[in-house]
Amino acid sequence: MRTLLFFVLFGTSLLSGAVDLRLRGEVTTYGTNAQLGDVLVRVYRNGIKEQAFTTGQGGKYTVDLERGGNYVIRFSRPGHITKCFAVDTKGEAWQGDTREVSVSVEMMLFKKVPGMDLSFFDLPMGLARFEPLTGFLSWDKAYEERIRPEVDRLMTELRRRSEDELDPASVVEEKGSSRSRSLGHRGMAIGKR
Image 1 (cartoon, rainbow, N blue to C red):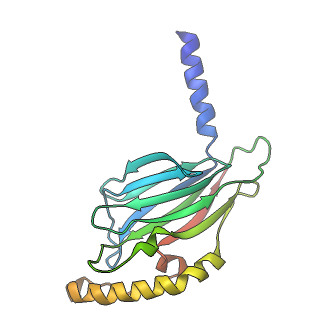
Image 2 (image 1 turned 90 degrees about the horizontal axis):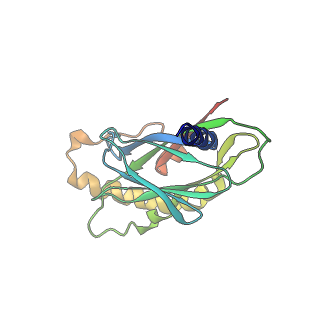
């Protein structure tokens, strides 16, 4: 029994040391920036669903990604548009490097609009590359520039239609929004040793 307990504890510590990139953040509602709970988060590695869970009422999530994979993280909630982003964690790493890099990524969802085709948002709203050797995560700016015109067109139409339905007191003006935020995600890397 003692031997079995040792292997379970030792194996668990090895698995917990295998995490190279930790994504954490919250899901918010477009227009109000309110935390959005009960969001289904699905994590795919190399096209295969690896895990699925639901956020709590605060909309917070944490996902651990190991090196050597292409990941897609999808966020969905009934009555809202499903959105996702992708992270590539392939690359060399220093031998014995046990660093964990933590990145904060917020995802903004918005409600479905009857009669409006929003299937474009099935595409990743961001492509990120994690370099295990350096611990840096970078977003693909060229990809964001390619999808930007269609995202802007759809968001303009969404705002126009939403303003017709929303109470004017609940509309929040966007000031100083960053490029990544307008695409529905915002990320910041924080390295830990």
